[in-house]
Length: 128
Image (cartoon, rainbow, N blue to C red; front, top):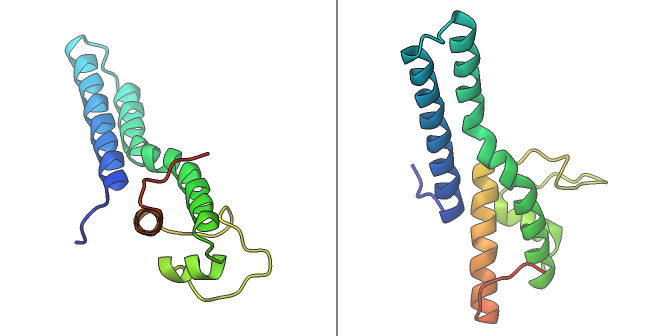
């Protein structure tokens, strides 16, 4: 398993917190006799679905940040796609929203572009 980048660690921590909080709520429901089959099933479904919430919420921000970094570093979209190993296929109207890119690749691409920015400009990237 490859080493996780900082934002990926943060999102994983949030996911763990959501799962533990959900399990605690189920436990409290069990202790106070508010435990029915439908509550346990609903609670379990909420817990399972909350695992990917932090990644889904960050995705839009990541894409915006990657695009800003790409413009600041004067990289073409093809170079960025090659850096992320997204694919060398050519789409006429390619954009970030319609392309499936795994969360892991987005985290790595964001980290790589941030390091390139730091190396080229000597300071951390700040969103405008």
